[in-house]
Image (cartoon, rainbow, N blue to C red; front, side):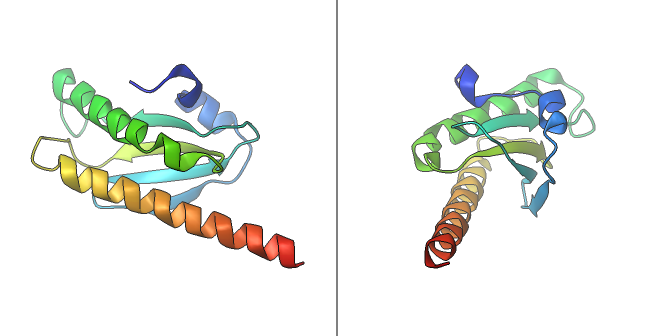
Length: 123
């Protein structure tokens, strides 16, 4: 489970007045909003339409939280609110694909963050 400082609720996510940026992946859709605190926060949404049994929905939330937890040290200078809306239930077979997609998303965010930082320094 993610530490409390890295979690948020869907209500708090929508109360953030920033405009959301939408990124679509095979396993999930992520909405990003810039926040004004010193760390990123995450909310994980697994719709009931995907699976009616809560055991599988909660397993999916747990796995996504674990994967994000492994990537927290790569998120030091990125300050976003993340809302993950899952498209598929996570199983042991497709867990590696999820890890790959989340790590790719974080790398892309770091690259864009560094480019924005370089542009501000040159101006």
